[in-house]
Image (cartoon, protein in one colour):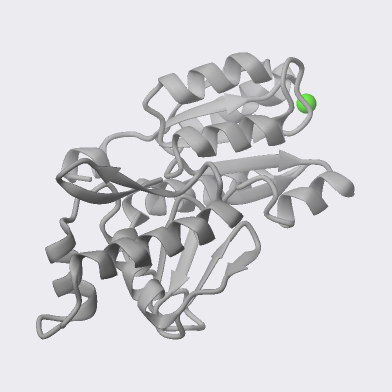
Length: 242
Ligand code: CA
């Protein structure tokens, strides 16, 4: 998240078994200054996606080795911030992508045009890794929405979602979750959480934080068992891992 990251050419991994199409995508992303590499197998694609430093993943659904939806799911577990553009055929594949089952950020229906591919890729890479924990105004609404690891939280009405399921949160739980989501990976002591969420004049105790965290954890587990969790660092505090 610095100037170097923002200005260097984006690195894109393409997982597509139709070689001609993969070559075309590499070429067309190259003309928007992205450095793209292609692999034609799902299992290999998953390994490279997880082990490389990518700015975007372009993922076909029907792949030898491991299907694109499964690759997408596993990549999400390891790297929730990586933008994923799915390539789908019309019909049931598209339904599954749009139903948010996959965790993809966007999709293109085959056959797609060059300009559409380039526009989606640009948009995804631009918003990409820089959006974790940053409020996004989406044009129609000016709500304070935060997003991390497939989890969205709307602070204006204390609602949160993951993969199409809504988490039912109390106001305090929602404030606590929003605090973590705004600072992914950052460790907070109980006192810091009391100050930030309950306010400086709180009359809460350490166990207030513990019990809220435990309830929040249970609710997160119910909708996002593998993607977002609150970790305890022994004698230090808590952090959100996505
Ligand atoms: Ca395919």
